[in-house]
Amino acid sequence: MGITAQDIYKAFYRFDQKNLPLRRVGDELVKDTQDVNARKKFCSELLESFADLDIKIWERIVGMALAECTEYPDLDKLYEFIERAAEPEPAPAAPAPAKKSKQKQRTVPAVDRAAKLKKMFEAAKRGEFKEAGAIIRSSGLPDEAIRDYALYHWPDCNQEWIEENKRNIEQLILDEQRCSNCPGLKQCKRFGYQDCGNIDKYTGNIRIMITMCSQRMEKENEKVS
Image 1: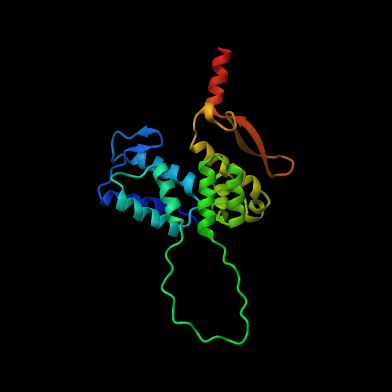
Image 2 (image 1 turned 30 degrees about the vertical axis):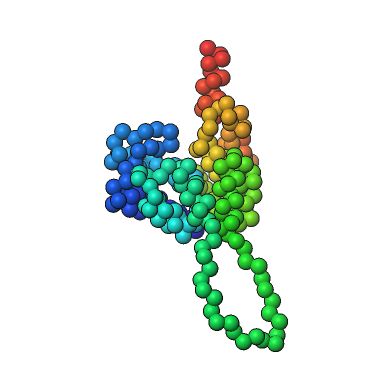
């Protein structure tokens, strides 16, 4: 299960208890470090980027921030903590060896979810969102995030509809994550275009359409004027 706004605000409370000021949200400096609206905006920013993050990983990240930061950690710092938190924890001391059984035991390789999580964020940071999406789908992490996203945008939908539109919802989530860390129009890998999900009036399912982002629209309007 991914983190929620409540988990993020709990972290904010712990940061405030340690007198860590909130100085930056995205690229904007916060004039009042106690500004409630700035905290709401930062919480939304974190949810967009880390909605699929496992709660145990998040708790490790918060612990790192409390130990190492002198102010609220920004997104870049949190990505750094994620890479460290996703590393496997030291294995506990091995118990005394059991007596060998004559019957040969079958071993099943465990799925390293932490390693997959780390690869997902590394791909996302490089802007390789198709690869990140493939890792998400293979790890089975985003079911709650997909459901929450669908219910937020289409409150009347049911689980059957969500499953039928799952791939398109994943695509929209990844596209929003990419745009939330916008590098600017000149460095945009999609040249200022983004995905938009509309409901097809004939099928009732999501139809992905490509539209201009606000920055590209502004630039196109400058050409016309």
